[in-house]
Length: 329
Image 1 (cartoon, rainbow, N blue to C red):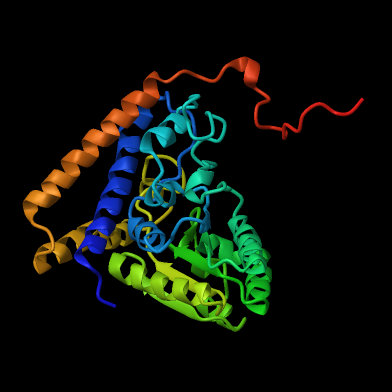
Image 2: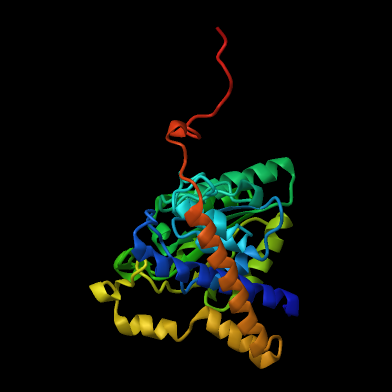
């Protein structure tokens, strides 16, 4: 599949937005006024950009504790995310969800969950609803290799295959569950090989190659919309920061330093930028302008978030229970 210049520029813009959005979190987190724990996806930007570029209005995506890239790639307002991380009323969940639970229903993000594997059955349920209604929409479950250890993945994939549901199972395989490598958790670390036994197409791609991610997701989305059922997409990638927080956990001995260095040489943003420069799709001036405009937008978003008000303590119960009106007497 040949990608149009507008499409590949869009992928680059999304990846730069996600990268700089999170790098700014690293810059400000030490001030201690952003209280929410943050799980950063620096190094994994190509997966969010490539998959979400194939989604249309009405499609639903379900994300994890490492969700910033998925939200931004779907069009989430950076200011609403930053404000949420600061616990402010102008946050996407009015300061009640923090970094791990943002929600943008209007963008097809009903909610995110920090429960490992928790996104998977939610996407299958959404896919079942689309199927029963005869809609050509699809549902996406984003999850990490840690979720491949959970039994709910097997149950969900089996059900989706049985009913030919329009679901994309997107495994962002960064090799670690917190600090435990996949090889130490499974006798067979080949996630896709295990999933293939359920009878659905499985695709393994370079998760640091935005074009490859986009094409693989496009083919899977076309199958789902045509009523041909789910696809399991495994993207091999790597997170640069620690499991949680702005620091890298290499210093604590959680991962080999040489492993991180090798993956940094395969930075998805740098690789894609270089490819577009070599093909003449963009030039150095375009890239420079892109970074400057992105930084200006994010600096403004951070400033807006910091000056936003905190929620009114009187509203502490807001959103906890459904408001259905007064009960009949």
